[in-house]
Image 1 (cartoon, rainbow, N blue to C red):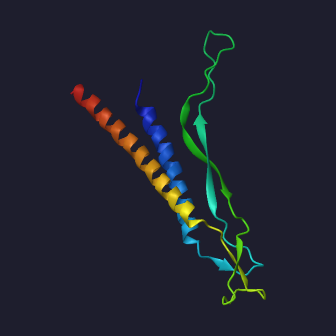
Image 2 (image 1 turned 30 degrees about the vertical axis):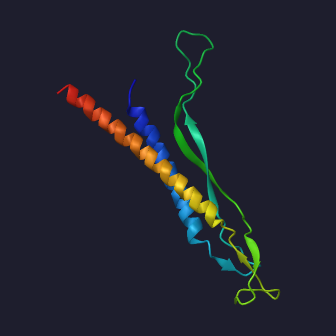
Image 3 (image 1 turned 135 degrees about the vertical axis):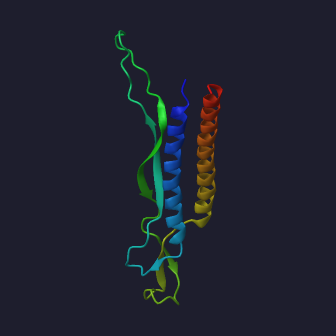
Length: 146
């Protein structure tokens, strides 16, 4: 069994984590955006992740038998938005407020975003650790033959 796939799989995790971190950063950067109620406000982003699997392989010499497809990592398959219309809040002192004193905010949930940040950071560190340990194993194996 080879360790090379572990590096590739962890690499897909790091790429996914980086996209996740970018979405979180964008959401946090726009948390205080405000527009007038008739305008479109920033739409908070969430990434959609799915496993990457190999195609089932027909086994030579065996009729109608395939493997179930092995996992090859994860990948971002899309980006969704939550609170696409933002939320209307009362802020009569704002120059953007309408006659009723309402403005439109992003609806970014800062607590949720900070929780996501902790999870994304932990996932990134775990994937980086897998790569580090696999590299160390490879170097140990190479030193045995020397």
